[in-house]
Image 1 (cartoon, rainbow, N blue to C red):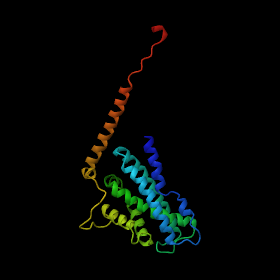
Image 2: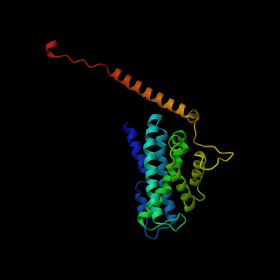
Image 3: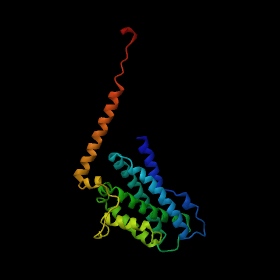
Length: 228
C-alpha cells in the first residue's frame, strides 16, 4: 500500500500541477524553448506511468487511475477557463504572462499524458471516460488546442494524440489502427461484466493473501501469572 501511495504522488507530479521548469521561462522565451522543456516533462510522465504499468495489481491500478483522472481533468478544466478568459488562442505567440503560460503548459502536458494512460489502460479509461460527457467535451477541446499549438507538429507525441483519439472514438479508426500498448489482458476485458469480474476476483485474491499472512504469524497466547 505504501508503494501505491508513492506511485500516486509520482503520477500527481506527472500531471504537472505546478511545473517549476516551465516557470523558469524568461520573458524572451519562445515556442522552441518550451518544446525542449516539454520533451523533458514527457520523459518524467512516461517514467511515472511505467511504474503504474509494472504494478501487477489491477485493483490498485483501477483506484490509482480513478484518482489520477479526476485530478487531471480538474487541472484541464481550470486551465481552460484561464485561457478562454484571456482569449488565448493556441496558434497565438507563446504566452509571456506566468498565469497564462502555466495554463497553456497544463493543457498541453495533461492532454498528452491522458493519451499515454488511455493507450496503456484502455479498458479502465473507457470505463470512466465513456460515461462522462464533461470529460469528453474537455478532452475534445484540449485535443483541438494541442493540435493547433505547434508543440506536437512532426513529433512522436502527435502520434500519441492520433492513436488516443481513435482509441476513444473521438475520430474514426483508420483501417490499419492498432493500439501498440494493448495486451492480451486488455483483450479479456472487452466487456464491463468481464472487467468487474476480474476486479472482484482480484479483491478476493488479496483478502485470501491477507488471511494467509495472518495464519503464518500464528495465534498469540498470553497467560496470566495466576494461570501458571
